[in-house]
Length: 313
Ligand SMILES: [Fe+2]
Ligand SMILES: [Fe+2]
Image 1 (spheres, protein in one colour):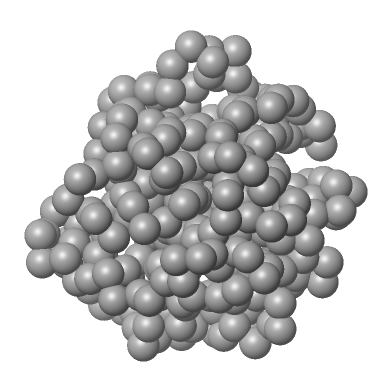
Image 2 (cartoon, protein in one colour):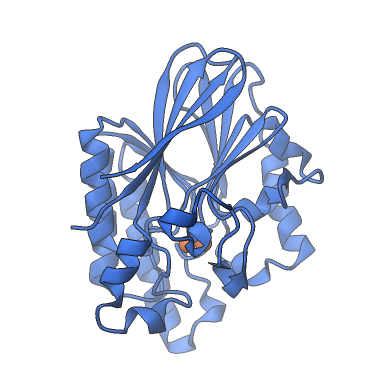
């Protein structure tokens, strides 16, 4: 079984009253063997709070067996930890993007999977994919609130459209936050929150959050040994070359943004499919780009952010 890369951060903040440890994961893209290893590590580390930044299910590529296994593993994690989930662009089906003869089957199957997870007591998520609500706020502890925003199924296909962007962001603006609490935003893509090295000035609502936890960037395919030199990757989602902010943390005043590097890097549902079909390639990719878990220790105290260590298990 392959290794997993763990990065541990300490964040202290004046709004926090007690120590809380949270793990964040993202982007399994139906690769359930890796999620199984992640589950065992989270359990061994006695993690009781897990933020999942989406794309765990590959809703179109891959097999039903893989998707069912992912759901099963998420349920197993929820037996020892509270899960808060934010749907990513691969988690749901946008029927107009699929051949007509497949639409009904894909949608039905997708609804069935998410219904199973929504019925779990310890899994909190917005009501997608039925589109009734794409945002949910919940109390994680007495001093921490988490707001989770999911990408609507059609968002990815209209991501360049200012109107779709506005609708997505507007639902965040409408959230009533308790200013006394440490507010975490869980969102699939950092592109909605971050522009360059600073948090986008345009998105004033983002700055109301103390911590933003995201995924989607798949670490920008930076081999482990080069990660400390640059946060710019080689290849990011949408075939973008040298993407900025592909993993790790950035800070703007009192808001910290954390990008999880993902469980899978070259996912079979995107441009990784041809590479993954080369014999022996899966094993090699997983060795060079191991699945990632971020561990976030939150402490009371003056506002500081520190990366504590990075290690493999
Ligand atoms: Fe992804
Ligand atoms: Fe994504």
